Length: 120
Image 1 (cartoon, rainbow, N blue to C red):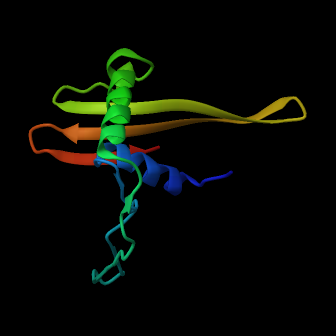
Image 2 (cartoon, rainbow, N blue to C red):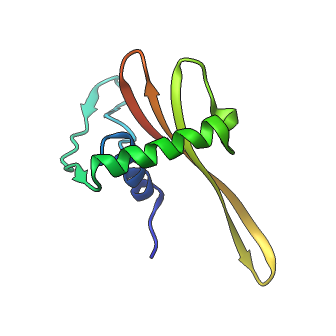
């Protein structure tokens, strides 16, 4: 089975939203050379992908990755940050063609109770 980056990002968003996967958005508007802006409407419904208990458990694991594991460099004072780090390597005929590092961060701005899921 194959998934693209945006599908994987949507799946990870459920762990930061009580089990509800939301569709990632790259932009909320576009603008032309005259400065006029055009809204982009997103009519994609959210998806209840797992229970709140499961989402909270995985969210806790992601927090531990940043607090105690391989994602320690992502820690930032004032933010609760969870993450999943990984490396994918494409090998062809015994030679490494490309190595990609994928990181997903679940950010919770504690003071404002605002949640973000970011992938890069």
